[in-house]
Length: 101
Image 1 (tube, rainbow, N blue to C red):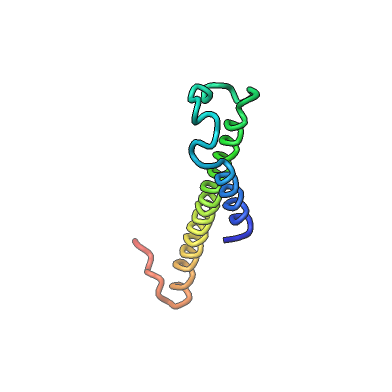
Image 2 (image 1 turned 60 degrees about the vertical axis):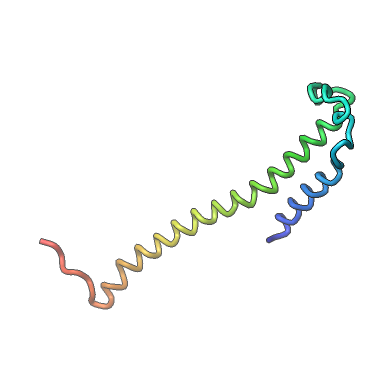
């Protein structure tokens, strides 16, 4: 795990802890508040929840996408090496198959 991954996890964990426990915000006592827009004066809980959600999604998705890209690169690189190896090594060892007629 590199420093970037640690930073993502640390940010997501910090925001999650800062959001508090259930019943820590006004929306837990007045459920109708969940329908107010994020720009409203008492919607700080919505803005914090959105920020936390983005951080958690980044923590989950960014490393996953990086691994997927590395796997695609590695597979294509391995196939290229394998193709070159299968063509050149048998020729050098005199094991090349005779041409088909």
